[in-house]
Image (cartoon, rainbow, N blue to C red; front, side):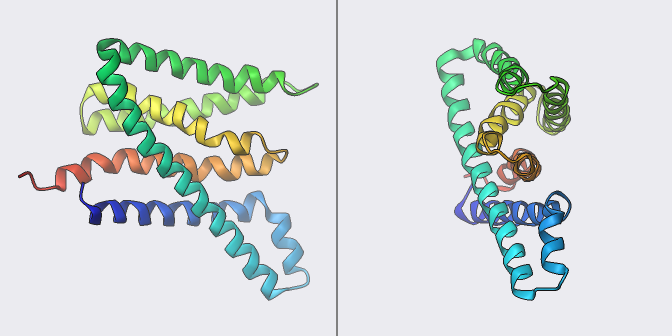
Length: 198
């Protein structure tokens, strides 16, 4: 991948992250908009739009850092563990999903476990869908690495919001993270295919 394609990938993911976070904020943080619309306060509204767009840019940068870290870890894992790397990835996927349910549930008091189960299940279903597309467009061996990235790396990127006291930011962050991660994963082989071979 040359620098021009990397810049294109970076800017496109940045726009996706900023745009999705802004759109999500209209629903998730609707009370913030209500306060500046009744009565109408133009500068406060502009400030809110800039804030959520900027927040989306940050989420996008976190997603891109995670993606490039994953590419490095994946190459290292393949070189060091060879055939057992796939088994290790499956174990880490299972442990991450367990962590999203059990340890988060243990950290709360008098709360049902089902919301945590549904969150982990939702992440797994989206990840399976993206991984299936990746494997279909490349090869079957890409399925487990893609699933690992979508589940494990996304969960690691999601940690700052999971530790926040407000559940709004949990949902505000996961939407752009999932879409940016899926976009980068599915566009990479296309960018590499377009690169002329020497």
